[in-house]
Image 1: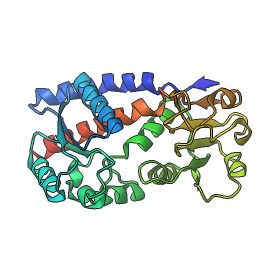
Image 2: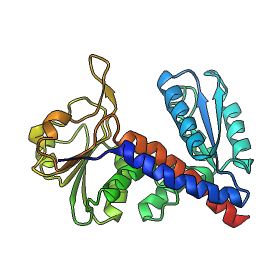
Image 3: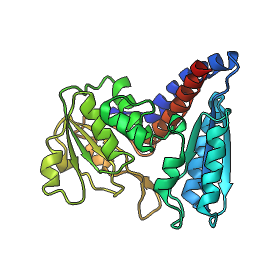
Length: 283
């Protein structure tokens, strides 16, 4: 059984990205990422802090805009408009969730698709559908990068994805299909979940439910990707998969923490650099 070490892979990729950033800086271009956070959500603040630190590690210019919880929607839209026009900013990320009084869809639509490095804008999601994505969604891209660098074949494989979110499940299904996999997407209303999971050569769980995937749901030598990020009763970070049990029969498995999470942020950095390269070519 192989542990798919996302943390180690992320460090390898960041080393490659540092070289790319240096090359851009020699041309007078510093890749820039702007992160907008609204309110005092503690988890969001941790995520934003981690993203800023990752930018600094490889030489990306980063700026965080911390806005008050009660900000008017028009004021937030004004901030985004200024970032769209700022040539120092190549990527814009609005940290979710947003306060209830702000319409998430309007905020996402306001971001210039050329700077939508999180791939939330409908235009960019449409390109994922067509297999023409400029900025692949970060978590799905991280999962595919883990599989690719671990030399795990996707073409012709039966892939089961448990979870149908717009951030992970749906875009990952599209990307897997475009790569030649046969994909089944399961969710809370799926009947016979165990039976469907047992058919998977590659099983991805992205639900957010501790212990959802157990040993009796995995066929021998399957590859298991755990995207879940949960806290157990003792406050310990866990995934959706019963790691100790499932690792006994899986051929490869991602741990939590240290699996998909570090790769998600790394793909955000990669998308920001890609946007900066597009800017360089347009200039």
